[in-house]
Image 1 (spheres, helix red, strand yellow):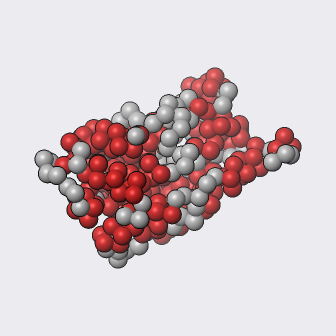
Image 2: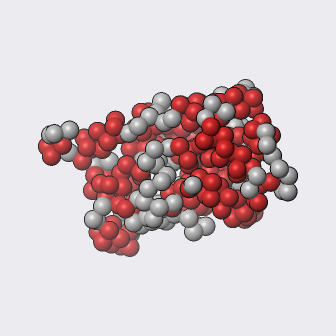
Length: 294
Ligand SMILES: [Fe+2]
Ligand SMILES: [Fe+2]
């Protein structure tokens, strides 16, 4: 660490990723479980109950006004069935991930909570969009992929600080294809590449690594993960269009127009789906945030 002044930005970023705390065991195992096709709710219950804080947060969200429908839920098993396993992953990531969702992204001129907000909205949209892909993917894996797609911004943000004016002028002039180009000019890498390195540092399942690395260039994703990556790609842009971005880079990305070759989704269906996402997001966001931010 004493020689950090000699390191290039990419080397410094790599060092930060290597210094990043590993995910808490319970979160890591939950993410691994989401990638498994034949898991049972009981396996999720067994995992969550090993963590007292997570257990109390899950029960609290399940009993919040937006989720409870007037019933009092005291059993963790019932709470998880009621919320859905993916929501449990969301609560676990939001409340237990070190330095990821709980900090402002100053380099992106983004306030505390905006990355989490954008990620949650993208996750809900991804879970809906994967109903239209040709080869089924677990809804829980899709939700998790949406939550984590921009994880690289949490580390890269630091290396973009102080360049707001330059970044804004590049975006306004339209001289760059997308924001990744600006990130590369300033740091030698981009949030997709950094995110993939974080995913590898955390030993996340391969489809999550593909989503994080390729979500702005879905055509480059490995064939077996490509449909999921397209789903996150569309969901990400939909979240930004819906007003939930992560600061200065919001809408500085292009939609890959070949998405309709991978998703059997007509524009009209997409519009309806996004409306449903809006309603769900609007009604549940406050409850999840309240419990996570405590
Ligand atoms: Fe992104
Ligand atoms: Fe995003």
